[in-house]
Length: 272
Image 1 (cartoon, rainbow, N blue to C red):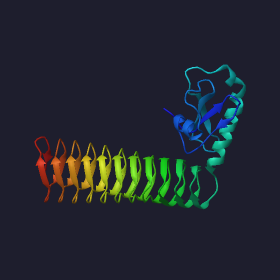
Image 2 (cartoon, rainbow, N blue to C red):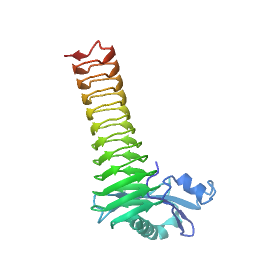
Image 3 (cartoon, helix red, strand yellow):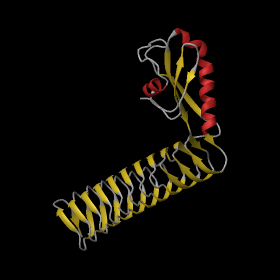
Image 4 (tube, rainbow, N blue to C red):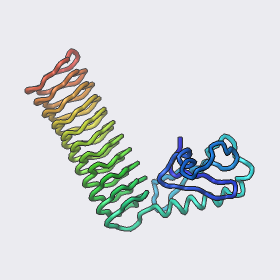
């Protein structure tokens, strides 16, 4: 599997990089190389460890079955080129706007708006507004509005309003209002208001108010108020107040107060 930061090194020592592309095959197409060149170029990766953004350590990898003899003389120069490229992507100063770039955001940085960007990693930073962007790992970022951003891993981020964001793994994120977000796996996230979010797997999330959310599988989630949520499979969820929720399969969940909830199948559920 190809990772950030990927590159191709030609037999003449040229290092070909496009930071938007992690796939070596995409790089081959982008630079119009022949895929059957064989020994004419080498696929390499520099995989950074972002635990310390001031002194980033990395793993250098040659993504080939065999390393060609000619590559040895270019190896150190290739590593230095990749290190230089990574350094140029790190945002180390407060900035009002980031538009159309790939970046890593350092700790204690404030950004007012991020548009059409690919953010590889967020440190402990403040982001006011995001749109049409992608975050691979949100880290400890404090994000006020994600709008239509795609977040692969929310880390320990604090998100005030998720808007129409697509979140792959919410991890330990704290989300105040999930809005119309699509969340694939809520992980151990704490969600205050689910809004109209679509949650595929709630996992061990703590949800204060499910609002009008659509939850495919509630897993082991703790839900305080279901409100008008639609839950397909409640799994082992703990629900304090089901309100007007529509629950297709209550599974092994514990429901304290069903109120006006509609429950289709509750054989193994505990309803107080």
